Length: 355
Ligand code: SF4
Image (cartoon, rainbow, N blue to C red):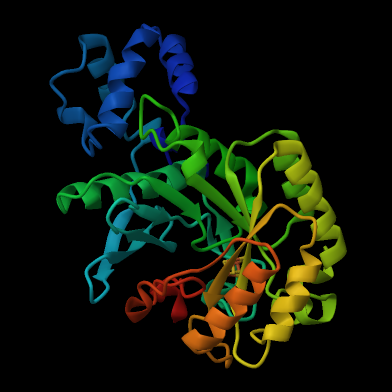
């Protein structure tokens, strides 16, 4: 944390909080009521709590704003889709950077799409975040705080809390591995936000060492890997990261991950008209994934200003899906949600950074 900026309370795990209280001569038993205030009550102003024990209240008064902050993602803009189900929050960080978080309030599947970096270094050509470049990694506290903001929004709307998280907002999650894993451990804590690991998906464009690390560490989250091209030439043209970790190396890492964890991988495929959306592409993709425990998730290209690809028709996506299914893989087409507010996959870009 940079000088003068208090460390975020949202970045502390429960056990780290206990240790911190102990170090400050406060009985760590009080960590539970602080944790509940943060994550069950979504308390924004801890200093006003009347239910804290005197030692905890004194600790909060002494530390809040000095050693620890609850900073504060400031909601700079909140736009909702025409069906009022997709909500895009433009959130300001302490250093004036901005990120976006998307909350999708669909019955039974309340999901937040979180950002993990301000900007992104991966440069995927069809992605608005990639087009803006890398600014910085988010801290674990800034990632957790997005979930807190999502929960507050749903509570204000009278909706049930978030059930699912996808790390598919701004940034490449595995490029910010440590902070992301720390944040996910905090949000899945049963006494707090309690979003189960099996309801959390980490997505990557193919950072091979990090995929292998996830496998080695037996991280309990789902993994989604973006493919988009079925040979190095096609894939590198869309995802520059493929030049660093080519397709064969990526698929080898995926096999290791599946073998080690026993979990399948969801492979993302953005359909771009005339480029990778033909039945022949689908047949080749089926062959490429042969023997891999895979689910294929198709995404019809979401438009961005910096890429001139075209969104394929629904019929083309359906035909592609049918070929993949015939090849023996479960295959779904991701629903186009929030496109009217640029909250779809690949469309996130902090508007303040366009200047
Ligand atoms: S698709 Fe993901 S990894 Fe690629 S540039 Fe966009 S945010 Fe980064």
